[in-house]
Image 1 (spheres, rainbow, N blue to C red):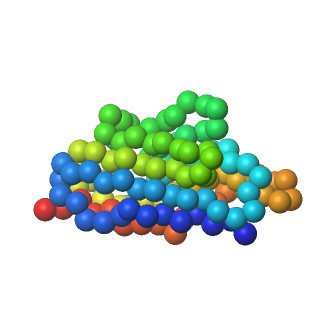
Image 2 (tube, helix red, strand yellow):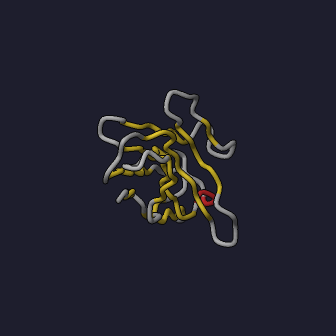
Length: 120
């Protein structure tokens, strides 16, 4: 069984910083893309940042220059450093990974989500 466990959410003032981390565990035979998504109240889930294995990192236009995604393939972790946070960044943030399982299939997995609230 594959699990994605996130940490690092919370309340922060506008202009502040937070760092999210996600650890992938279980019977893993490879990880392709690792990414962060977010979903604000009343809105659809959207891609924040994607780090494909061996590919170019992609960011949502709204976070470019403020957020940085990084991954450690040895530790099977992905992080999201968020700087200059704005109230519109308030959302539940989800870790996502494409993982090769015991059966050889590449499957999508999601973390449980962590709340980020940017407010005075």
